[in-house]
Amino acid sequence: MIEKTPAEIVLIRKACEITRDALILAKSLIREGISTYDIDKSIEKFIIDSGGTAPCKGYMGYPCASCISVNDMVVHGIPSKSIILKNGDIVSVDIVAAYKGYCGDATRTFCVGEVDGEKKKLVRVTKECFFKGIENARVGDRIGKISHAIQQHAESNGFSVVRELTGHGIGRKMHEPPEVLNYGKETDGAVIKENMVIAIEPMINAGKKEIAMLRDGWSVVTRDGKPSAHYENTVLFTAKGAEVLTLETDDEYYPR
Ligand code: MF3
Ligand code: CO
Image 1 (cartoon, rainbow, N blue to C red):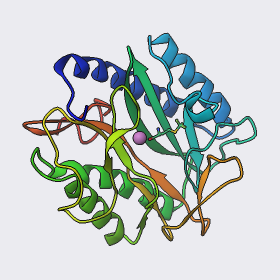
Image 2: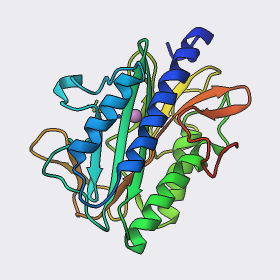
Image 3: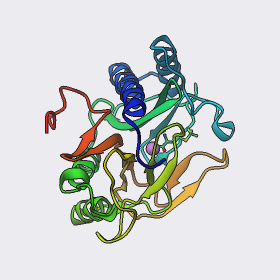
Image 4: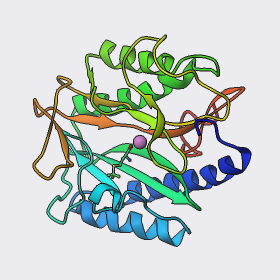
């Protein structure tokens, strides 16, 4: 269902706390020399130890608990012992945790050591896109209100919005209706309802918007080889507006 019951929201909140805390753990591990495989293994152990499960593992044959995407990789990077972080990389860590059958979904893009100015700005603007997206969105508006604000902020900063991948409703399944595009008109998309839970996830490229798929069937990269960033939270709509369920309590945007 697009609108969740109070009992479902209790479980989604818990799933979102595990997801958020797994991201905080991932952040603490990010440094030059660590493999994306080792980051994923720690994330998986944390989720299991927290009483949750990692629904990405086994999803359409996906082999890991998280997706970890470096530099020009947009999303769905498969953690690997041969991908070793180095100074100057940006790395997005995308985590879904489930608790008693309900999911939370969130992504952060981290900087490894000293990154160049373009990457730094890309990471900042991608996060800002999320908050611009939810800022004015209220129950009764269309999802397009979020989509339009994201596109506007990305493009006014000289970046481009990936079209092929979108945010989504979330609940028992990690991907449910409605679709949450990162571009479009304010009047597009489903109507936002009270107790709707959606994952909003701008994927923003420093260069052109076009993407390509690697031969592993998962990893999505930019066609022009320029970097890409990703920022995602699971959001609950109440009469007051958007409540971000996966946000770190010390985030600069907390409390809203
Ligand atoms: N977490 C992703 C999203 O934001 C989807 C993960 S794909 C999977 O929608 F294959 F890893 F499951
Ligand atoms: Co998602």
